[in-house]
Image (cartoon, rainbow, N blue to C red):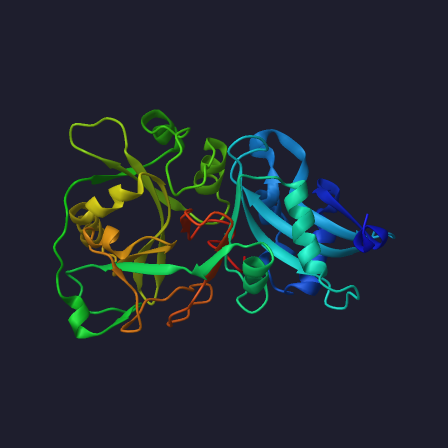
Length: 346
């Protein structure tokens, strides 16, 4: 028992708490936030039906002794409770007028007690408040997501990106792995070992993959299998989302399953994909991968010499920094981890 226990209760939320959590987010997080207004999307993102659990939602609640909600910690688990469980914290918020100090830190501690995992990682972390807490209190590794991009070599006009002329020079590309679009989760299940865990990646269960990328209520994702011509099985899976704006379109890679080193050998196939589909460019937002590893596939690290937009809802033609934190330094974070690749409005 400590002073927090004398004043508050901490527990996993149930389905009965959904309306109160959404109201809390509306008043304390943002009036127009999709999670405060779209109940269907809220249930999809934080429910656990994919694991046969129809009673809980993925929030840890902090309530005063009268039962009034004063803090929430929403999270995304990549597998059910048990072995190989990795979790991303998505929303951490306590009431702005709460009297007791460091309540947010205590909420995170209780979240970790109630939701044990092999590792915790998240992106979109507030650099002024949460990053210092993650680094100093929880000893997390922190940093800024890297944004890599590869241009369509046939494009002369860019309506989404803004580039200097020297960036249009062609690069030498490796042709080790081909890319084939995957049209169903069944195809992944048949030709890729979803139970295998690779270095530098948190384990993501088949149930998570199917729900996240093949059952999304708003976004339509594309999946691409890495293969060689004499192979039936895929050696990796890339997940992407097509984004259209300004009468143009790009391909954003948001997740990857497989050996990280394989990403260096998709250059020719990726270039063909950009040309055939008419994309301005493809980008890949990660935290973090060595720059040399992606060079063979034509990717270059976005620096200040180019504008490669990060936000499209609403569209901002500017470079944006997204901070991350992780409890295991070696884990690579992808754009779709946590709740970073989701709509803001419905």
